[in-house]
Length: 297
Image 1 (cartoon, helix red, strand yellow):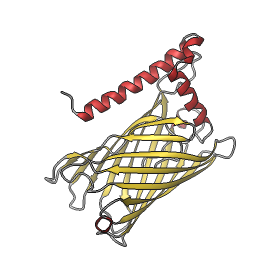
Image 2 (cartoon, helix red, strand yellow):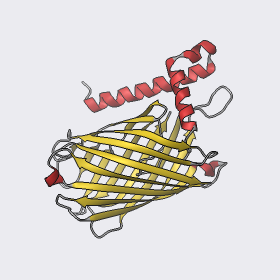
Image 3 (cartoon, helix red, strand yellow):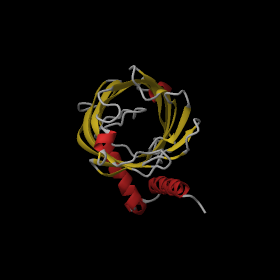
Image 4 (tube, one colour):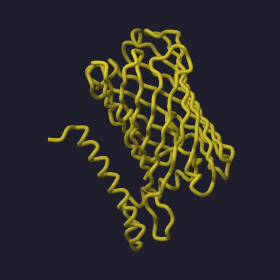
């Protein structure tokens, strides 16, 4: 019998295949096929995304752009005792755009593989949502403002998750100038119970990206630098500040499908890699290697 994670991943992949196959068939078939649910759905998503900037999603910072993709990340780091930890999944999963201003993110619980004798296992289940408040594509201002609302559920076992549920409201803004774009997000992680023990934190992420070219293979390369800063209030780290810098590069998106006229379709592949390095004396971990694999559709 398959485990829940295996069944969940299989269901997601099946859903993706259904979406992409249906769109491909709609593009190659006669007019009646275009009336299918998935063809209408994908046409609406394309129209929605055409109204916003077409930057690439950063490695760490959650983009204010509405995206539709299946994503999984792999994070390797060392704890304060110099023990290795692998995080498979990194709380990523399926991202959908059900309405022109809204994105819903259904994240697969991460799996922690530890080398310090602690128990391996799955972490907490999490969700996120976005409401796009303002968007202008490159021809009409190249800017965006979006609100997020995320939540975690304490489903992790054997110390691989938190004791309590949390919610994280966030505001994200972005502005582009030619091949350069800058995005900044600020939010608060608020535990619903045990506030005294866990404390609260304010998380501020900023990223600058530069697209190497507008044409040719170089247009797929987006070098970037991110800074992730956490301000702790209450709990065991009360008053401390942690800052991590992340140089990296994201490559995408590489088209995996084409329409009847030969133009790239919605299905694609994006990959990226970077290294998160502690910039402050206080840090809970250091030298995170971040690898991301995404299939936008």
